[in-house]
Length: 261
Image (cartoon, rainbow, N blue to C red):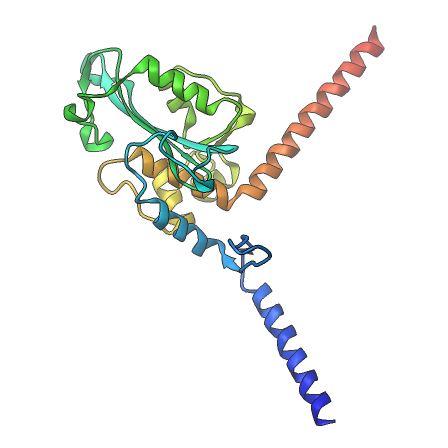
């Protein structure tokens, strides 16, 4: 009798522990390196761990030097560019650095670029670009071709991506982009329908402080990927719903046209 009651108490404690764990908030179960094992990790803890572990990987490397599972390019990549000023009083922007990270926040591409036009404003206080950094910079055409090849058939994550693509003189299908500046939840929650700053999103969503002094395209690309990862499920679901709605409307219009004919 005593043994039976003891077993009941143990089972009850296990059930309570499971319920309590489920009610602790947003969690997911990443697979451990040991096959068949998993652990519960809060999203916030995982994001900070990812940030800390990849933040040191900001050296100027390409994916040619990266090996292993974590460094694969994969389906999702995040991009950010730094600009300098050209033309009268540096009013127009030109590409000076482009950085790309993969889904795990690992740098797979990071190169300084020599603009086609003469630089009239390095914008060092914001861009962090100095004349010395561009001494051995790569030709724009070379970088443009390499980036075009990297982003081909990839889902590109970033903040105000139209600026980056304009600087690179490249296009990318809109349905293959995930822009944190226009994501509806971010605009509604933090900017009253307007595009929120990446700095604000990093602070509010991730609890991370960025862009205190000069900007870093590597850091900004990593932040964009972390933001996307945190909201990936809802974000991708909204894209799927929108795509399905557009396809359905197109099919309906085609049927209507055929019926009219």
